[in-house]
Every structure is written in structure tokens, then in C-alpha cells.
Image (cartoon, rainbow, N blue to C red; front, side, top):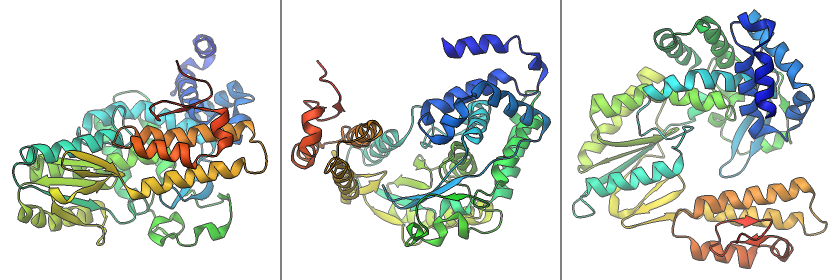
Length: 404
């Protein structure tokens, strides 16, 4: 009701002639707010969000909008990564761009590109990869081989000049709205913004110890690298790799191929065919996208030996989660146990507990992990949590009240 009320008010706004409609920015704001309401930046923005959105809309339409400072920090799970969290108002702009361009991207993307797409994601990627193997091997009756490739320092090596040139051509050809030039300007500012300049470091500088240089924007080549953590980075990365997807599917003609970000899987009945494909892939990536295959992450084996893909191990007739995922789940439980070791948790800590535990259970429930889930929750989870929260009978969810 609140959202619709403000959209009704916007219809009467004297800024109706603006290149970007205020209603579009409100929609982007509500999309953004649904994910980030508890952050300090979001709370500050929301305190007077109508005024802030009007000011932001004017800045965009007058061409004076500039991205603000980002917060840089390190996360350790599921792997060590450098994250740049954009200012909340910048995230609103990211959602605006996403809302306008993503429907066009979706028409251009192949079906088997899984990252940051509605009704896609890791579970579909795993299901499709399992299906590729089943079909190629004629339900495990014939030989087939699996090639898995990874790109070295993918996000940090995305060439901004190449990305924007591709995006510029795409928008000019596919985007038919009157605010096309304004959208190009916004994309240019987002892509060429360097979040390392003036960023706020959250945590300690020692947190960066052990992070390879090719995984940090602080060591990226000039005009290279997109910050992990931004919605636009995920979508633009997909767009950047779209020409590679079409090269594999249509120019090479490989039927069984899928990609999640920079993690690609290729399935074929001939090992020699896949072996010969590796230099072709490497050549395309280097010449067209200035990317390089990770030399230590080239996997080529018979399907019967299993393949690690998107946090699971795919084997004939069964799919397991990896030991790393098991270890991360155990570490997450231990972290939540430490919260209640000496003092009762705060409201935010209780929410974090539910979010953390249920995110792992949400992944694991798709695979044969009943015994593991049961053991983790009943054996390792602190009695403090067990007494105050309900564990579902199938061990797929922890809730604040019993589900009948």
C-alpha cells in the first residue's frame, strides 16, 4: 500500500518530463530496499527517502550524478574474496539500470548461463550438468568425458574498454527508449568508476593477507576489473561472457555446455575432442576478452570419476556436496555457537543465526544430505539455540516457531 501510494503521488509530479521518471527510481529503490534495509547506509537514506530520491533523480537527469564511496572488506566463506559494497544511493542506480537493461540481456543470453538470472542459479546449473552427462553417456551406458575450465582472476581482469564498447553497441541496437543516451551515460559512470579511490576499509588491512593479487582490485591493471558485490557487476560480467557462450554453442557447435560466472563445463563423448577444444577456448578468451584460463584449474576426466561443479560432486546416479561446503557449514555453526557462549544474542544476532543456518540447509536439502544435516544440527548446534528454535523434522529449516 505504501509503495503504491507514492507511485500515485508521482503521477502528479511536475518532473513528469524528466528523462528518467521518478516512478522508475522509486521502483528501483523498493527493489534495493528489500535486500538492504538493515544497513546503516540504507537506514540513513530511508530516513528521508522521498527527498533523497527526488535529488538523485535530478542529478541523473541533469548529468551530475557521480558514484559515491564504497566500503571494502574481506569475506572468508565460501572462499576468501574482496567485496566492495557501494553506497546505498548507488545501489538504487544499479537497480534502475538492471530494471531497464536486464530484459534485453535475457533475450540475448543462452539458456545455459546460470548466474544472477531469474529462475536460474546454482541448482539449475548442477541439474543441467548432471543431465548433460546422462544424455551424452546414454544414461551411463557409453563413454563420455567432462571438461571443466576456470578463468584466472575473472572479475579483476574484465577489460572496461571492451565491456563498454560491447554495451554501447548493444544498447544502440536493442534499447529503443528516449532515455537511451542517459542510460549509456549511467553505464559508463558505473563501469569506469574505480571503487578503490577513497574507499572505506572495513576490518583490518591484515585481512587482505593471503588474498592473491589477481583477486583484488587494488592490484588490477588500469581500466580493468569490476567490484564483486554490485548487482551491475554480476550482470555486466554475464554480458561480457555472452559472446563466449555463443562461440561455444554456435560457432564450435558444442551441445552440452553451461557456465556459472567463470566456471564452465563441457561434456562430449570424445576426450580428444575436448582436449583439442582447450586451446581454442584459450585463444578466444585472450583475443576477444583479454582473459586467461587458470592453468591449475583445467579438469578433464571420464564422467565415472565424478566432477566438482558449483559446490557439489556429480557422479553417476548421485550428487554429493563437497567437503568444503561441509566444512563451511560446520564453521558457520561454530560461529553461531560462540555468539551465545557468554551472553544472550541481540535481535540482529538472532536474525543472522537464522539466515546463516538456513542458507546452508537450503543448499543441502537438494542433495542426499539428510544424515549430515541431522548430525550437524543435533550434535554440533549449541543447546542454547536448540531449546529456543525449532528444527524441522526433515532437518531442512530452523524456525522461530513450530511448523504444523
